[in-house]
Image (tube, rainbow over all chains, first blue to last red; front, side, top):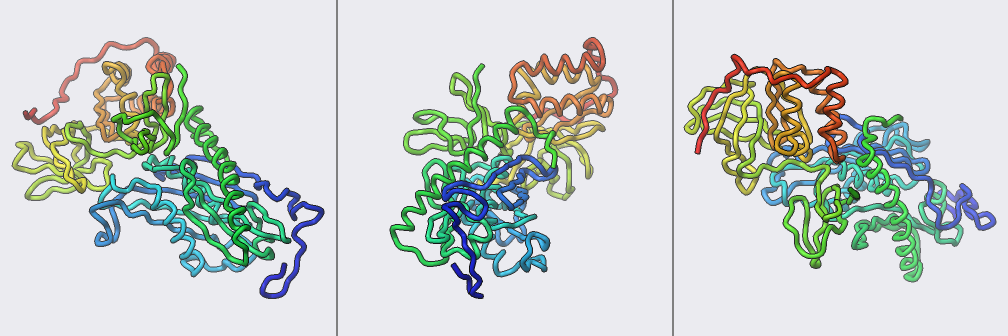
Length: 249
Length: 220
């Protein structure tokens, strides 16, 4: 329970986590659809202390043109953390080592889902802006982008949601917050497709045994199912009742 | 009528059904975009991206005039093309046209024919998945809108809606917005009719079209 600087923090007190949750409770998740008027599809997700805005553009003309493929649409993703997103250093906008990596892993999740063969010579842009961060922005971003892609009407083979599992205070916990992420023993973000339960993203840091990993993947699947219910509910609310224009910040 | 929303990847039916915006695997047909499934198992997409099909009637805007032909904005990633040798009318940059999709290549290049120029007016964007509702059964909805607006309206499969400059634009835009928002509800024409009669009274007789001749000719 110590990070590289040797800071210590007790993460499990009386079987409860720092924010009062049990080991397998998710933070509050709220999903809104259709928040950006000019985008082809958009969504806004609040997950615990994370606030993420997602806009989808495309399929549209591929720029630069020589990158385009006559066989399928290119999926491009730009994840960006705002300079004001958290207390830590995100002082400079623009690409960083971290955001480049996250853009890549998020893009790969959706390359596996989007039926891109229908749109040759085009690109599909996924823009993800983190307005506020509190641990687990990549999983919240994937959850937001999946909803926004549905809103954009881009054909997909499946829905996806993502959640982090980890180990904090020798307990396996679901949906890590910032302190569990920073001071815990291990962190493993996982994205699972809804229908066929494919693992589309699995990253890990820290040390875990094989048994722990198997247990954590099961936990992540249960967590993703819970997140999927919220995603589906938001989309149904938007389309069934036509609440699209009544969204208030 | 009971309808449920299906998300991408949700099962629509056993076996293969031939419908756009679906895909097939494990002897099951799945939805590829968000849609509604009614009692009879019919799948109606709520949101999709327009893809040109041969025979579609599309409304477009001329964006480039070249020797070989005209480039037309069709609400697609790439514009459509009208070869000059096929048309006998001269178009200018910014002209509105209605035409038929003659061919679509493997990579999505669209060739257009049966070109007609549309008179002065406005074009608005409408979700292409909801175009059938804007036209209505036997054109009931579009005729209703034309009567109230007092001008001509053309709806393209690509989702561009052209309105003649004689139309009552604010009223028409309000009605189109209503159709867009409630496209998945039944009894939509009645609801729009109620809204329009509340705003403007009884349904007016269609004014005869004068001085608004659509240029061009029919082919094949």
